[in-house]
Image (cartoon, rainbow, N blue to C red; front, side, top):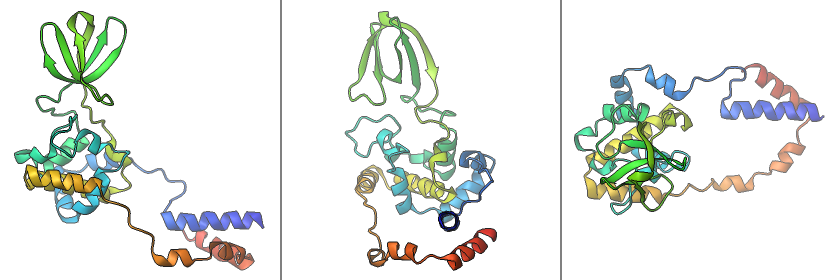
Length: 239
């Protein structure tokens, strides 16, 4: 009994989430990077949805909102998306997401510093004098001032935005939604863009449909029998 129950659960789960057992999926970044920018831009323009993109933008795993802060007063680790101006084209936004280190704006170049004590620091230089460097370091609320005499080595580093970030998206449609949202931020002007960013952080998940609370899940499981197993086995075999 346990065997057919487990098999049936696996069969149903595969149907629900669309898993193709035995086939490795190509990372989304690799798939998108093989296509012309013009093709991706056209799809984002037509298929992208800014409202859905706002939810993707605020997903904690992507950290978009942590670096591109939603208020003018916040300390930003990435360019202000409300001030994209002529850089707010679909092509530029897509290229910046897929190849974040290709072009770094002035003021957002990342530096890696090794101190004489062996500490490695990575951040963006906010101020530089003959006596010290001031770094903006991810995860630190305050700027870090480092005396020049304590710096052993200083080299340029890749963008703070990691490559492969799009691989955390669920599918290609989320990529188009995210691009559409960012492009619209750059098109509406700074004041409205900041309002949209703040509003997007306050969005909440939609409640489950009312009928979900009326489903007798335990009763459904108890009602499974040999016929249920056979139907599930046929369904699994058709995948």
